Image 1 (cartoon, rainbow, N blue to C red):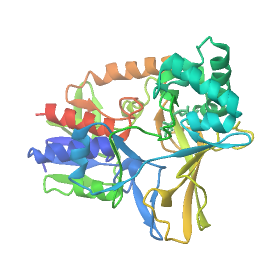
Image 2 (cartoon, rainbow, N blue to C red):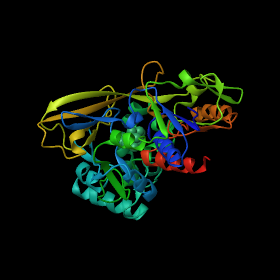
Image 3 (cartoon, rainbow, N blue to C red):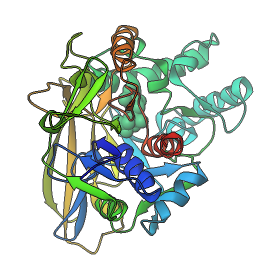
Length: 381
Ligand code: UDP
């Protein structure tokens, strides 16, 4: 078979690109080293409950284009994600909002703090914690220190193995402080879960006579990059390659390992219902609890008729290419510098495209990856 395009990785980046190009009439080969589609969005049913094998994936977007695109492959279940945080002696809504303030302070103090936040930032605003910490008003500063200490400091150290100020501020800004009673984890226009799960979406996307899927296949089994040229099974490849894996692996780690962060997800089965919210965070020091959060899957699809339940406990850990799976790029200036050096190597290959969280070393949400893939597919002729 003469392929026009080879896509490496069958997660959202790869599958969207493959689907779009096949729709344009291209012959596409998509490979993945794992034995299933979907990358880290892969899910499966266990005793009637849909479990996300690699941790919770909640779909939310403001991009109508992305929502319409995915709607070709799934129906939706309306779902608004809410998270609770286990503070020292209280359980409060996260993102930290006016309700969290009411629960953490006495009435008089809470009223004062809420009024202060409104006068400093306006009503219904979302303030990154690192911004709030810069406020010079004594009471606002006290509140910012309280939130930082109780919600962000240790969670971030567990999650990243770094102090909050060592990673890009955009990371903690994902979960801002709300100057309102809004306790939604996301505030996008479209917030849904796919009715039959993510895996079904991937199966539908890749079901085309123009697409060949090869699972359990590593890139190094069939492709080689050398001196600006791409080789497919020993012959020079005339088509294009879209690569969605780790960029350092693509170049055999020749400039050194690029750090990613990984998770160890412990799946547990319990009777009944385990917790109040779909996700509950534990922002305490690692010595108290080594995990950051627990997600209970039956909340996503309202599967409360089941008398059993499945939860994932998330233990962040260092990524080791021989041991576990990369989940997150780690946003520090040094890592970004190393990444840029790998990009320079990639630029030596005209027909090579880098796409997605791992290859672009960007903390993309699902919708942002899909948007990027749709745009890339439009440019590839
Ligand atoms: N974060 C935190 N405490 C929380 C929730 C989030 O410190 O209770 C910080 C932490 O650094 C985390 C980041 O905010 O990595 C982004 O959180 P998000 O829930 O978006 O992470 P993801 O779901 O992508 O793992």
